[in-house]
Image (tube, rainbow, N blue to C red; front, top):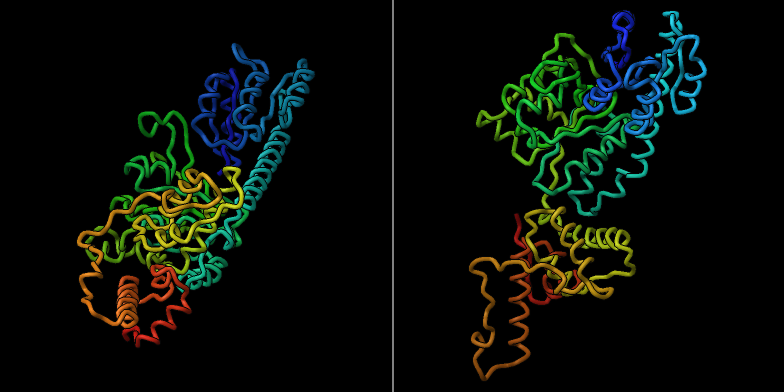
Length: 458
């Protein structure tokens, strides 16, 4: 529903325009002064302003200038008497969309308003498209070549073309919102809004207002009507991050909205219909939350039409070198540095970490390293120290070997033991074991054959 703000110090005109535009299906907000209009502009999502030219204290030209400072694209139609048409033309030079003369013809006014709002929507959609293209939320900025990530890419391609709800799960820092954006910007909805909200960051009352909007006066501080995220995302996608944190009462309203694609604003009685694709994410096991009674089973199934599970970074070590290279290139460009590389020792340290914060933690550490490195090579000293695991003690190899001994055989025994230990520590992922040892994967395989070391069968 498009929202029109009408500003006039004559109450009769406000009443007439309110009735006329409400009949046309617009949501109308009225203001009796320019100052009141400016306050509403801060609170409400508007599609058009219709303002009188001659008003006390702040006239229409002054109000127009304030509007263009805060929202240059928002269309403004000026209302003027015959004797002030020259001033209205001046207003158009300053950015007004059009002007109408009092007394106005109803059909002419309705036509001008429809044209202004349509032009505004087209301009806004083009801006959103251009921004999306610049950000390039496509596959090329989701880094990964491991089997789990290739499966996710394949799933994104299949689900993007549909309007099915998607549930993305994974640990914090694995890139759930990035996957959600890839789905949206590869879908037929790519030219429409992608709106996101973190359900864990707001109280229940605020979250309900943010999702569904509220009517003027519905609670203390609601000085004007406000559109919610569902309404703003109409035609596009709504990303509900950490949806598992929503309260039981809000889950009921979410379920009804997803089933019917309709809702009422907080404090409102009018039912609003929307067309929104919902993509939800959670770092919780929602199936377990359902079993424990913390999350509604029917809402879970409504959200979980297609499920994408993002593996933690420790389970896809083959992606670590690609991610390191990607982040070095990214931050080098941002900081005006060039030809930054990473030493084998630093790379080995990165490969050997547990990464509880996943890709986000790796990104922050590489950013820090690019800042701290004094030359063109990131050294191990540029990385933060990682605490040694409790009970992890390096063996004293000298005490394990007694003299006299056959040196080549002893060295081979130690080498075989180190390879076996690396395989165990890496859960028998050969690429990771090779990185722990500082050798290539092919050399590791050669050594495994040499020492008759095999990977246990599942």
